[in-house]
Length: 113
Image 1: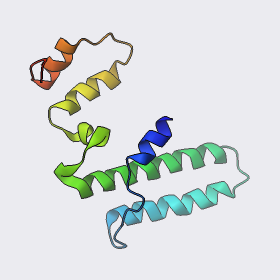
Image 2 (image 1 turned 30 degrees about the vertical axis):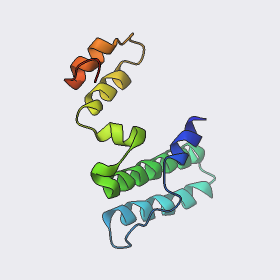
Image 3 (image 1 turned 45 degrees about the vertical axis):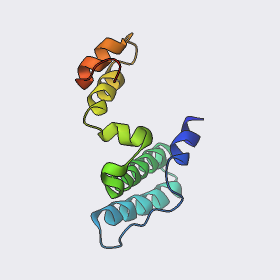
Image 4 (image 1 turned 60 degrees about the vertical axis):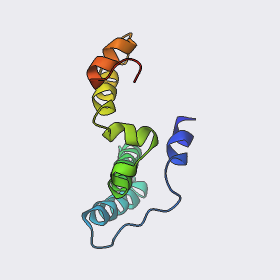
């Protein structure tokens, strides 16, 4: 369900300029992914998993930068100057029992906002 939520928030196609730094990173990841997938070496499965994660992060970065200030949803919240500090703290201490007042303070906002 979490993966579906993430994938549904992304566009079906994202254009990557062939000469961009993002394209170079993705090209390298795809090359390494193909090599590791075909590799009989120990740890190849772990390497493919991590390379796929790297590609996902790179694509998310590319998508967010292409949207600029128009990014909405949870991805937009990660770059919102008020919400990003709150999300960073929540992710740093997920077991903590967060109150609305604490989160509002981190966001420099009132509780009602």
